[in-house]
Amino acid sequence: MYLKFFKPLLDFLAALALLALLLLPMAVISLAVALTSPGCAIYTQKRVGKGKKLFTLFKFRTMKTGTPDVATHLLEDPDAYITKTGRFLRKYSLDELPQLFNILTLKMSFVGPRPALWNQDDLVAERDKYGANDFRPGLTGWAQINGRDELSIEEKAALDGEYVKKAGFAFDLKCILLTFKAVFRAEGVREGRKTEEKDAGQSGE
Image: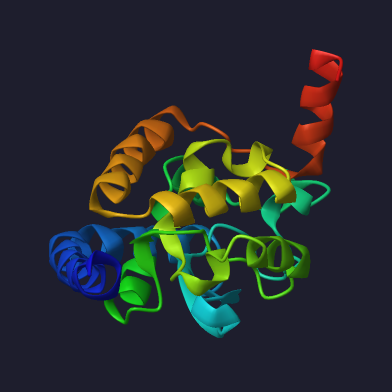
C-alpha cells in the first residue's frame, strides 16, 4: 500500500511544498549559474526511469557547454569542465534541486535507485538482477549513502537491490536522514578519472 499509493502521494506533496519554499533560492542559483558561465542555467539529460523508460532529468548546469555527455567520474580532467559555481553546487548537491520538478510529475521519487544515464547499459543490466529497474528512480538512494561515486557498477546495483528488499516508509526516512549527513560531509564524491588515479596512488591501491 505504501509503495503504490502513499509514497507517490507523499512525493508529490513534499515536492510541491519544497518548490514553494525554495523557488526564490533556486532563482538566485539560476542567476548565478547564468552570470558565471555562458549557457542555460538548467541542464537536461536523458535518464532511465521506472520500467527502463527514458525521461528528461533536470539539474542546474555545473559544467561548461560542450562537456562530453558521460558520467562525471569518467571524465579525464573534470577540472577543465566544472565551473566555479558548479563546484560549489556539486559539493552540496544543490545542482539536484530542479529534480523536484521530476518528482512533482512522478517521474522520480525522493528515495530510490539513482537514475542511470541513457547509455549506462551495464548498470541497467545489473539492476535487472535485483528488480531495481521496476522502481521509480530517486533523488537519493541507498547506494548514494553508502559510497556514491566510489562504488563499482556491481556494488551500486547490489545496494539498489538491498533497497528493493527493504523499501518502506521507515527505510525511506532513514535514507533521507543519512543523505543530509552524507551531503554535508561531501562523502563519496569523486570528480573524474584524474582524482581516482591520484587517490589510488596515495593509498597504494
